[in-house]
Length: 130
Image (cartoon, rainbow, N blue to C red; front, side):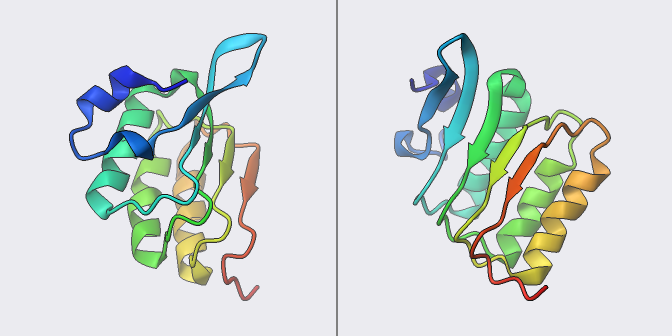
């Protein structure tokens, strides 16, 4: 299901950047944002997360596998993740060149968020040394 009313507000973000699907048939309002294999320029990445934060009450997971998220983009995500309104439960950033600094930025943002409800953080193949 595409969450069209978000997309109409995001002029920077083409329709293909969002693929929101029902996370469970029992709870139709629970959605997962699947951005797998999408390259998001910085402005589009910020717009996506701003939209998710403003409207996130229905989003329970974000999957950004193989989206070319590097250390610089991780710093952009850090600000989004530290927002008190960011209450995503599942976050998958696998197959991105985050490296140690990028992963540290993301985790720092999540730790600064007192209301964070994150239960699963997946960082497979992200070039971590520790």
